[in-house]
Length: 282
Ligand code: 5RP
Image (cartoon, rainbow, N blue to C red; front, side, top):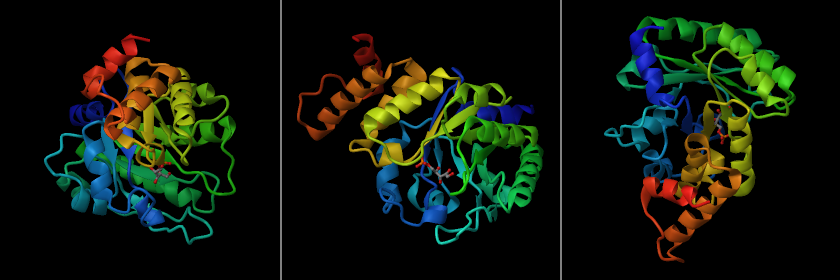
């Protein structure tokens, strides 16, 4: 792997081999998703806690502070909308030249294995990887799941392996029963997709299970920014991903940080380092 590409990937996947990516790209086909109506306001307090931010180009330009040190994984596929019967009809929406101008650490594109546009989306991935190799930009393949498609280990292993074989440098996919098989048969780092909003305790359990079964981290959106206390939630997710916290410890941390933000309790500790102290007490 070329040095520049390795360097960019190491900004997203931290030295412990893990990452907590914050997905805020929903608007590219969903429009103003709940929690992202004013994307800038939502992103601002979360940005420094995320290991990487995944927006589409418009939100990046308009709603993310350009002085940020948080690496950007730019969504570069689209062309569909929630109004489409079949969401698989995606093309590449950002040139590599503009992605470089935006100083991104990586680019992300969805593939739709088993859909009517399977071939087009897989060739888009291959093309993007060629461009990425040329300029040293890593590519994240997102295994999008159409409404009628399954989410079992057999299907997701197929998608992840195809993405890796076509050259994706890392892959994003859903959690499923037998997730360890999906991880084992994918030769590049795999991050778990968050999916629809769950109660906080369940989202933390899901994160824990994915990490325990070999995921390199998460790329989570709604389960963070739609949480009752989003900043507390991202710190709780990080505690599992980077600090080996159990779901119980992470939930206690979430509740304690939430109480601080709501001003209900006297702050026990402040900031991210404090999260570690909190965890060590359990
Ligand atoms: C769909 C996507 C999203 O647009 C987004 O990143 C999903 O995030 P979440 O499901 O965690 O809200 O990648 O494939």
